[in-house]
Amino acid sequence: MDSHSRMVQFLKVLLPLVAIVMLSTVFLLSRSIETDVKVPFTQRDIEERLADQIVTRPNYRGTTRKGEEVQIEAIQATQGTENSVPTASEFSGRLGLSNGGIITLDSNSGMIRPDKNTATFIGDVVITTTDGIEVTTNMLNTALDEIRGDTPGQVNGTGVIGNFSAGRMTFGTEKKDGPVHIIFTDGVKLIYEPKRAER
Image 1 (cartoon, rainbow, N blue to C red):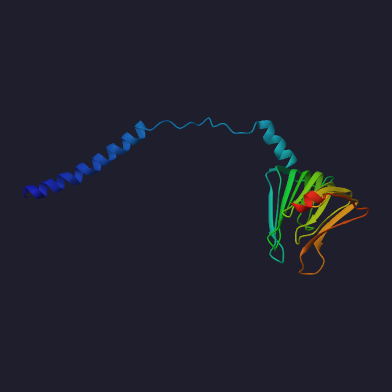
Image 2 (cartoon, one colour; image 1 turned 90 degrees about the horizontal axis):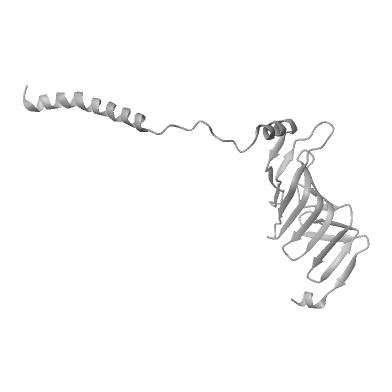
């Protein structure tokens, strides 16, 4: 056997041994893993969330038949029971219209019912449109399958022509595929401001 063959035989034994030593060194020198990981919730928080079936940051996204976007989210929501309906806190929504306009909705609380294709905004509701209208009310009912909504009570608002109030507000399409209109009824009062209209 020549020197070359002996060297090959020697390396066949040596190299696996070196690999084993290197692997052992890696495991021996590796830092210990911290097993005491802190969870950002206390045991009481976890028990309350399980008991009340609380969902953190729920988010609903849908598209209407016309391709308009409907997005609704909240900080947290409860599942509800036989005696109570599901509710959510810091309820907000975004309706993307087919013409590029956007209606944003914000309220203290609310509830969403996908089974009925409805969402209700409750408490300090603020409705804002991209064309400069801002409306406040106590409650707003909206649809999930189309851009449509109504307020059962009084609304107050501001727009490009001034401040206004009304006993009720609705928004939606008058025709099947027509544009979205906002309609104020039941004792509309407007304080016209020419300077604001000229801007």
